[in-house]
Image 1 (cartoon, one colour):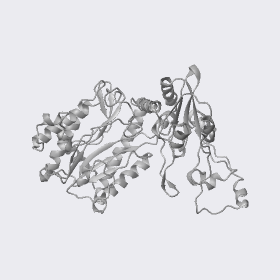
Image 2 (image 1 turned 45 degrees about the vertical axis):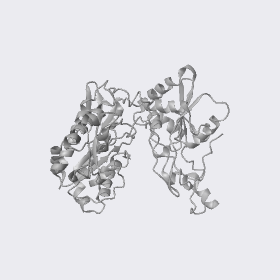
Image 3 (image 1 turned 60 degrees about the vertical axis):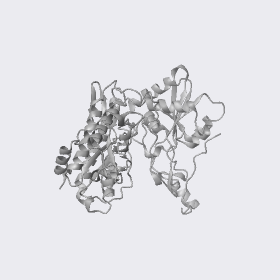
Image 4 (image 1 turned 180 degrees about the horizontal axis):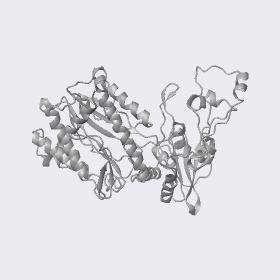
Length: 483
């Protein structure tokens, strides 16, 4: 089976092209090469990454697609972001990477030779560059040609049309990152993958668990830009409070910073006011802002190299917490602080969640909310405290905001922390507005505090420490920023 060749993608309402125009369009174009010294950021890191993957699967072909464009409506695609494994192995991050495929070809005792199968720059002696709405340079911008892509990455390049030929005839043992490109899945005869492909996906996740110094720098950059975005939001609160969809105003303010400083947001911004904060992934963001309520802002900037920040702050829209709001906030902060205190090399990944949940359960018991003791609620065969704090308390962070998710349990969820791992700690309380087990004054409160941390030799460094965490510090910070 072969992959379909690249072709012309024109819109149904495109104007016809006469032979005279076609001839004219094919002449007198100046060369526009990329700078001769241009390389992907972190260029020297990628050979080592590919070598580490190579040693795990000697003698096997490894296929890692970037992914395909997805239609949003009619002839408009969603903005493209390459698969994180492809980014980690190549350094190629742009929207022009759609449909491209990295192949690690077995090369005897020397391991693997990486080959990038790419759609090169549209030639000016054909119609694609001005007629193809999906890939033409006039429509979506220029791509590197094959030699330029090799210059950028240090990897041999081939035309994407030749991938089908590679996958025809006798094949070596092959593993595919399935579910990324359905055409590659079909061409390799594994639409649903098998255990070999699952193992490849797991290893690609596990190799990313420990970040190198360059990656940590990129993550810190994402955090720093996110901090600026949170400051932008506080300055914009007076205008947002006047708008009938203040949540969307907040979303827009933060997203502007993310696009101005990086590739965009790491995920869809959560701007949840009042009881909307009790919806863990509230992304409708269509509500007004009540100055007497809280705003839960969960947002992150993704750098141009596609490294993600993920931070949450819960802010009093009036600038000052009420006594009940502060009571609930302080419980969540105490839970987060207990979780952070467990972070060090050799600690179990689940330790910080367990420490945070103990504080939450004891606080709920002290409030008289739990129908059982905190100890009983924390038992594995009980868990009643989870009615008020449903989800886990953190996750790995990197190229994905929920990074390394395909890792096997013994390496991640049931594994131990190592120096260089980056993760979030984010306990929360979600006290639903219709929950009759709660006193009226607590109903509709949603609070989450989330920070990004890197494991160090003797503990953990708070990467997002420039944003205040205590209720008093939040109020002072807001007072300094509000006009």
